[in-house]
Length: 350
Length: 131
Image 1 (tube, rainbow over the protein chains, first blue to last red):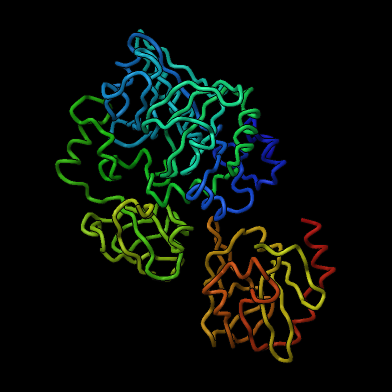
Image 2: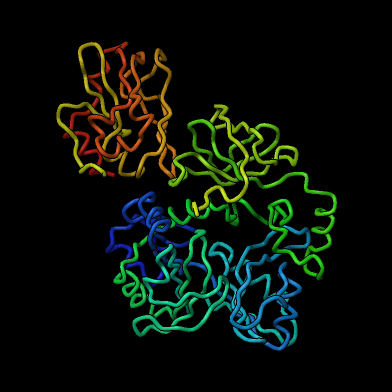
């Protein structure tokens, strides 16, 4: 099986650092180097770097690229210009979420979509099959490596100037030409660096030389869950809709896109169930798939390194979705009390 | 801080990566360095109730890291006489000292003859080498 897994250009670097490698979405990826909790704290307190080169990149180009994407993506691309990026959803006819992604407007007529590794092929097929004259969809994932550098000191350690969230610009770090995207999946300040595959090792070495801690997918998951960023495949899927998931803000319901009619109806009627954040009130760690009494289900769960308690996301009937509602999670047969909280679960004290 | 790899010779081992330290008609139980290292930093120990019965080769509790949950298998049968409150409060104690401060439970043996089926340190290291 091992030889069928894909490897990023940084595989040898991960091995040399003593990373624990695990299969993830068809890739052999570092889940941790020294420890999930330590890496998590490095990102909350200083700066950490994640190899996320397994993520997919799809380029959409042409005079009608904008028209195509406006029909297929939930957010409104008219709200961003060249040099700006937007979190958005690829939706199906039922308003379900095919994937969540970030669209970078490279030019007036050219977009780069950064998509989840597990959905790269499905997304590409979805877009390619719907291509219209004047739009060209290409999977360019193999051309690029992606490093997420995250944490309060990330920008300073890289020697970059402050810039607004969801902006991007070309830059170079120690001679490596790259695109610096002010985006991330941790809730911290930072950026995602997109470089050519052949430059990945030099960039990784340059980032580590600046005192940034290597971090694995384990910490990436605990970080995103503390700030309630959904994980596609767990919290949002082709069978869940954006309104129920609390992602209405990513849906421009005043435009037409795939599934918009369904989403308008869900919004008007009010969703039957909602994706809520919760913290455990007893010692227990919620996990994906655990039932919540009353018809709900945990979609993501972990132990919060910052709060030192079990935390999670899950769908519950709308009547149980208000903050401070007590929930009962079935933790392998044992009822454990949780409490609904406002998102995000963790926020830096300011 | 994680402990360095070791498998003390004064313990008896179960191939599911559990150890027993015999003490008259009682035994202290825990998980081996290999189990701890595989899991990573422990963040939760779900213990049995004091007084509960544990059966050799069956799970008596759970340990969890950030990423995973794992059953803890009883190397011997008996009745729980104590659970390690320190590990419940601070599960990372097991990472720091899996054979000392990081013990999990103490049992009164119901069938001391079961000890004969357990492995010594050398035999357990052989099990690990074959994995």
